[in-house]
Length: 338
View (cartoon, rainbow, N blue to C red):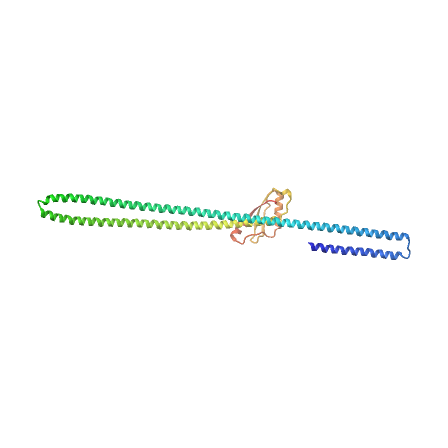
């Protein structure tokens, strides 16, 4: 800009010098032609012509100086406006980046909170399952103790009956000592066999009950583990899908902001448009070319100006990601004059 101004100044100065030289040359020729017949009127004419030349030269110099001052003022104003626009653009980009960073941080914090809550619920569920299992084992042990206690009482009753029978046999012993000895021997053997059979039956029953309880417990554990694994897979799939959806929506919003910024740079507005808006429907090509734009919904002057701004842009920023572009192929924008 300064280089063009210097060139213009140089050419203008050379042009004025040439004009001044031609005028002076013309004056000299007039003087030569008038020399053979000098007279007072001729001298006066030459003096008048020279003053006119000087006045014309001074007028040209002042006009050139005014043009230079106007050009310098225009250049300085344009530079100030360009600097102001550049600063505003930088501030807007900074604000957009800060908003995007804040949004991502909020989403990450929300995701962490949801994950912590899910883990806490899962931990609580597992603790409740373990508590139920422990309660079932406790009840099983109590039942086993109850059975053992009943068996002990039964044996004590049998022992009491046997002692009573032995006492009766002792009374009979006086009459038939040999018969009693044989009877006692037979009774002892029978008792031992009975006790042995009962003990064996008891142990078999206990082993069967313990085996059944262990089988039930293992089945419950296997079912719980299978259900937990299925639930974890479903939650992971849902979380991956939600994460992908959030990423796509975040990218769409980012490119929406970039598209609005690109249109704003080409949008010419005035003060009468402040506080008004226009809703536009755009259809974009994968290259960012605007295939179509509707007439807009909102203030008529704002919509017409916004449509012109959209049509003046060669291409708008779009994502190379097919999933993101699919969400922004047909995009709705709300434009507000800044």
